[in-house]
Length: 345
Ligand code: ASP
Image (cartoon, rainbow, N blue to C red; front, side, top):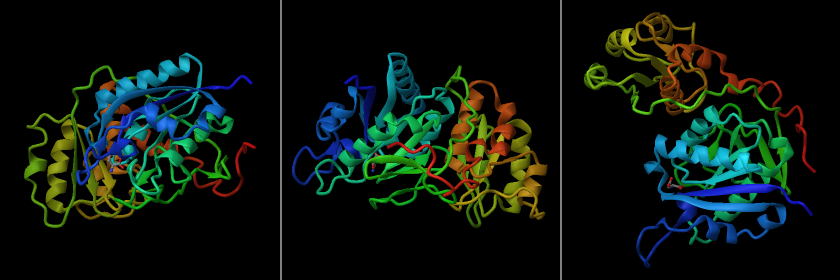
């Protein structure tokens, strides 16, 4: 039988972690080849290319590393891979997913996965997640869905997925929207149709800096006041509630927004920012009037990545278009549960 090609890359993270000696903490040591050996079923589904592109805790990944992983993934597709799977740490999975998603202009699925339990723990979830991720990457109904995160039997869209628990096995969720699909008896089943995607070109430069600050009760303005002096090219604020800051912060935001793009997201962990509800100083209406842009459903961390990518290809003028359209969230609600879209059997 002519099996499809599948490319797998390991970047590190808990899925690759073991302790060198008893009593020591786990560190990334397990190669992609060894991870794959734990799920021999994959070789009955595809002809697999596996590489270890890094062995890092995901907190130490950076945009330059991600750009080289992206170019590796695109090369694999050019060489005929039907899909690509990347294993990495879960701590920054929600950010890498959206980073890749904005730049993944291919129809082939790019699937990210990891594990909450290290390779040496009883009930390690890495092998099951890897096998599920391979199934999703190979499924015809995963095409044209961009980048997806597969964890614990669920498929999440890059734009909405978040790590919402620090240690639990069920650590990932898509607040408001829920998972876009599930693996049911090893079959990839989608709950919604693919959304329209807005991809960006590769950044021409990578030195741009985007700060992310969180509003908090009675916070001073020291850091905020120094954002421009420190050379930042953009600012994201994880605001209170529906996208609010204090009166003191609002005054400083006005000056900053005259010079660099400022996005206001919600720090709540779920839901969208408002646009036309509150009128007090520091409210979303006030901040929009002062030149800030509201993030909509995009969480602060993902908004920072969008702004960094837009700055990198000099398309920051399109920020409002990217945020106001909420493109990746289109269709998410309308068809929830309405159908199991294009099921694979
Ligand atoms: N705890 C993390 C993980 O689940 C560590 C990391 O992100 O590298 O993989």
